[in-house]
Amino acid sequence: MTAYLPELLRGLLVTCELSLVGFAGALVVGSAVAVFRVSPVPPLRAVGALWVGVLRNVPLLVLLVLFVFGLPDVGLRFSLFWTAATCLTLYASAFVCETVRSGIQTVSKGQAEAARAIGLGFAASLRYVILPQAFRVMVQPLGNVFIGVVLGTSLVAAVGVADLTNKTESLDLQYNEPLTTFGLAAAFYVAITLGGGLLFGVLERRLRVSR
Image 1: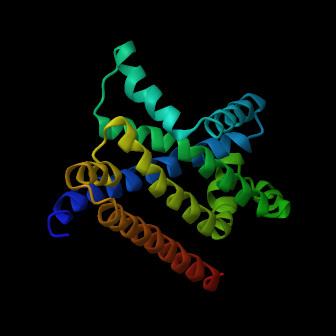
Image 2: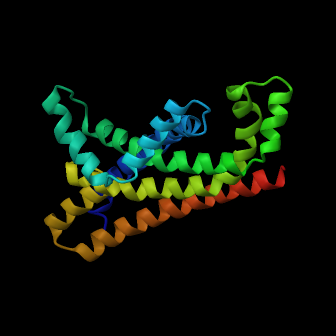
């Protein structure tokens, strides 16, 4: 185990970085697309619906292969890490979008009407009235999206990113001890996902108390 740990920890660091960058990017992009989906402008709603419809129905591995091997063919070259992070961001943004849109729909229409009555426009109503209330019910679903992103990072090993799964596969080929190497990797994944779930659970309880 002492021979495996240094390599596994390096892979774990890459997995954590990918997870955080991918989720943060998905949170920004997905929230913007959710605003499109609830916008009163029909073309923006169509763009949001198309975005979600396409990305939710394309496997993440297919998206990774298209970006990693397809972008260089059109003259766009990025590092493997940032290409994988972009794919994770785009893929998870579709799920964040639906989570945010569902949260917005839980806010009563009376709140939006009251915001318009005091002179707030669509953007200001979302920012100051609707989204702060909607976020309270979005915390746990967003936690589930985060866990999905963490587990999704394991697929980047297929395109050569030196993440936890990639390092585990290399160690297994070197030492031929899959039970030990993959067992350790599984323990690391469980620790990350459980830790993320607990963090989002604490945040949800705090927001519930502050209502």
